[in-house]
Image (cartoon, rainbow, N blue to C red; front, side, top):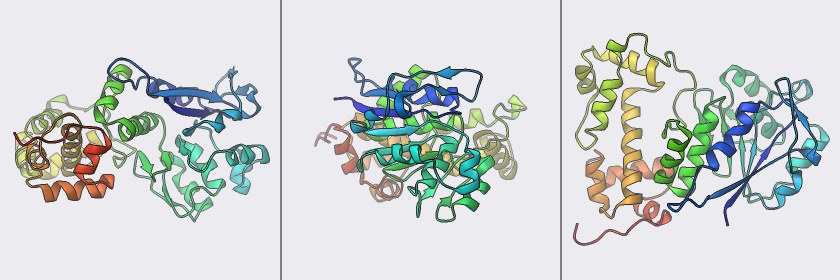
Length: 326
């Protein structure tokens, strides 16, 4: 059976953000085109809700969909005056959230993290929301560890994301988590969006489009991607870009929202995941091919970022077991 995603729309919902889960999850398919997720959009009582824009929406479902939901996504809603004044939820909304099953995964898009915090679901957890409201969020909910500098936070069962496109990144992250990098990359291609942005990337990127394309770091990023198996230092990257290390680091961060070496480590880890999912290369060969040098370094990265060993990751994604021929 497909994984059932239930998307909650409330009064004031942002229409663009409301459409993100269905757009991404409906593009996640098996090789024969079978959808891996089913998406239902619902409102409390199944009633029409007014969006943040100049129209209402009418949905086909009410909170009864929570009985079968494997994941619940709360679409972006700016915190209400009541919530900002009291830090609590209206009774009907609290009752709706109480109907979520204990094993169901819960996801908030952007400022809907305020709803999860008000329900006590984020106490003692790390979380994020739109950078403009992170200070307010932290002041209202001191039991929550607020991280304003990331795209999304994955706590296992509960995930929170920053604004706008970060919701796309988090949904693709969930597809990767559930079905692997190959399925997620294919879904991203069908959505015509970037296939890989780690949650730890900065929310705010100074220049989405480089101000001076002749001095962009994009060519150096492509150069590094073609040489992941080789040792690459920060000095090597700066030299390729014909910049000083200081200038290169500053420009790279302004364009990519992340430091050069952290970006390189993320790309190496992403490539390792892909190789483990799609090939029968032994772990040692994967480590070498991705520039980690040895299996110990690769295992450390997997345990730190994924909580699994490379072998366990391969088995979890039904990948081919290594053969003695390699």
